[in-house]
Amino acid sequence: GENVEQHPSTLSVQEGDSAVIKCTYSDSASNYFPWYKQELGKRPQLIIDIRSNVGEKKDQRIAVTLNKTAKHFSLHITETQPEDSAVYFCAAPSGGSYIPTFGRGTSLIVHP
Amino acid sequence: NAGVMQNPRHLVRRRGQEARLRCSPMKGHSHVYWYRQLPEEGLKFMVYLQKENIIDESGMPKERFSAEFPKEGPSILRIQQVVRGDSAAYFCASSPSWDSYEQYFGPGTRLTVT
Image (tube, rainbow over all chains, first blue to last red; front, top):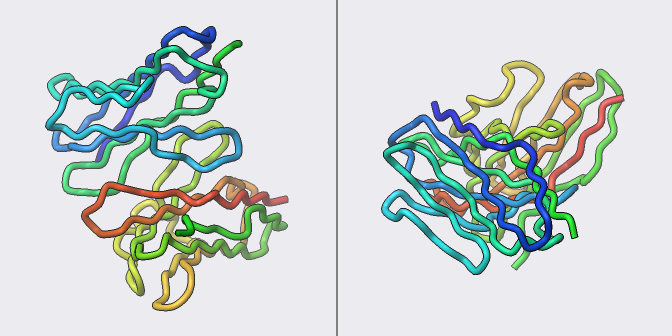
């Protein structure tokens, strides 16, 4: 099955700084990599995803990069704002499956 | 278009009681996934169901836990004889088809076992 490692577990930044969260996965057949944001007491919400046929995808202040050779993908948030404070999860399905394996999460704290 | 609904949002049970968690998928979705989230941990897959079928229950404990998704009505995750270790947030997600990566999460049920 898939094994997803996520780092760091906690990330503290000043408002306006950039934040980067990294995930590695084990199954080379995985081809879809979503990122979820979960605010305290709320449901996980998909914020961006990338498929294995592209190396980077951007959506305003959020971007995701994928390195299939090294089997890692990263979430980049620029110009962070206090409302970006949340727990972020990466995920990857095992090849041939549509069921995601989630990382343990990164608690992002943006100080005003 | 209503999103994924879960109820109750909070559930308190004493050790040994039964817990029933309900999930109504998004309109038009017939695929439901259940996940468990322990404090400060990620989401762990439990079971994947389609209407009237359990497709994959590889993440569900063999004892005390069961799930169903009847032809009519919500999907139900049932935990019998709850223990303190069952305290967690239980999320369901729905998907429009078996070959879709898109999963839409419900608000979760927070189960507390006293």
